[in-house]
Amino acid sequence: MKKPGQEKIEENKFINMKTIRRADQHAVMEEIRKQGHCPFCRENLAKYHKSPILKEGKYWLLTDNQWPYEKVKHQMLAIYKTHVEHIKDLDPQAGAELFEMFGKVSKERNMIGGGVAIRFGSSIHGNYGSSVLHIHVHLVEPDLEKLNETEAWKFKFGQPKNYRKN
Image (cartoon, rainbow, N blue to C red):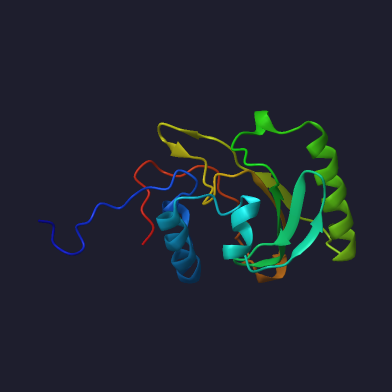
């Protein structure tokens, strides 16, 4: 008989619990892990993602990141409307729609500059840094005023093989 705390933790193939950065995020992701489904698939999104959908196109949903990174002015997510985990599986027309959405929202929010990041896929060594493996794209305007004199704002791709968040 197993003692409390020794139960086998079931993995959820749609998320990566090792990349979670915040306590409030962890509580939601733990529920997603237990449910065993993808939190970014349309039928599940409203259960967990509490930021409103800002724009909806044929391929993408645009929303503010519910758990933004530190030292950012703006961070939005474009979530692909179909469950896809690799960039090779995106419809080529989705790129045009994505950049049109990002262009409009950057103008609306008067974003001076920033970056776009998309992580995709996984390997036998882990994934490439995403907490959710469903394709989503980050549009980020770092808050350069909040950075220290020698600090740069960075977006992580990949993680060490033995990575464990404290």
